[in-house]
Image 1: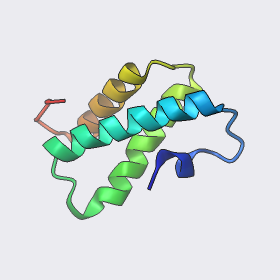
Image 2 (image 1 turned 60 degrees about the vertical axis):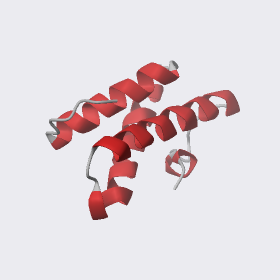
Image 3 (image 1 turned 45 degrees about the horizontal axis):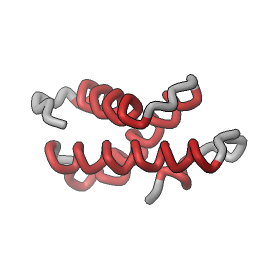
Image 4 (image 1 turned 90 degrees about the vertical axis):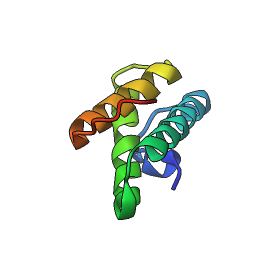
Length: 86
């Protein structure tokens, strides 16, 4: 499920920002899926990752690399993952 479907209905993100969020989300998911065992909770994990990226963007972040890296780091910290590869 793409990040676009997780955007709040009152989102004021324009098309360029939505593409940036999509890029950050897809890259972050690839990194997490490659290095973490998300198992049957993949949908919940993707939802959490999308929400992290959206929250950062709502706070003003527009750097796709920073959005990706911050979301990965927070996601792994919340899960207690030991593997820090990106």
